[in-house]
Amino acid sequence: MKYAILLSYDGTHYRGWQTQKNGISVQSVLEGAAYAAFGKKVNITASGRTDSGVHAAGQVCHFSADISVPAEKIADALNFRLPPDICVLKSAAAPDEFDSNRSAKKKTYCYRMYVARREHPLKSRYAVAVHPRPGLKLMEEGARIFCGEHDFAAYCASGSSAKTTVRNVYSVDVKSGLTRGSEDIEIDVCGGGFLYNMVRTMAGTLLFLGQGRLTLDDVKASLDTGDRSLVGKTMPAKGLTLESVDYGFDLFGAE
Image 1 (cartoon, helix red, strand yellow):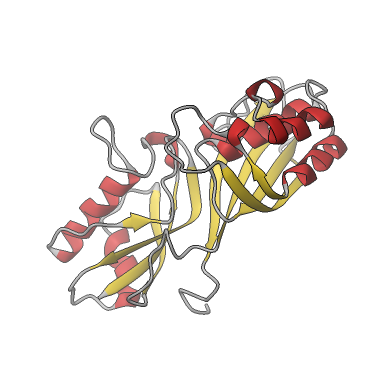
Image 2: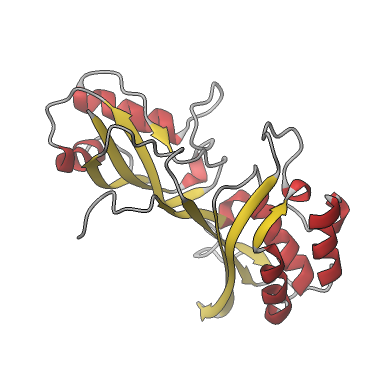
């Protein structure tokens, strides 16, 4: 039988989602908990492989197994054996044809930064300090340029195995607010799929744009030409969170 789980994790101490030879991964810890809970080896697949240090608020995974634990109790069975920085929020039976990666219609990521000269101890785990303050209106204008189907070759890390660098971005929203004495800036990016480091480089580009280190014409040209010199830096992993994965139907049911 196939099952789906909704997963949240703090990626600070993990080498990303995928099992690694060098270092601990979210996948290896989760599969270890599953083995302890069910008494058998379980291969767990995620909607996407988050990089080292990246967090997740709404990662979706699936696995197939012949187990006696009711679907709705799987979350409790796993959480009992998981560390505090990984939590299964929900569990459910999934359709036989469901695949957490291939069935995904869209994913939403959020990149978080805050305006400060130095790191804030209560913010620095999930957001990046930036200075000087970027202009939000320029960032919003730049965000609109990313929307639609474009070639994001300039925003992809070198060595990527992607067959194509064309991606469809549905929306990019820039939001701000004040907490703990400094301004927070959140960049929400929703799309059908993303290249390696794409969202982090988009965030860096919007930051540089807002700080006057790039122009709107540079951003447009980066999509037209693939010129890496026209984009901002790839921002640190800790500011990125996978917020949600949409499959076009309610996988886990209503609350």
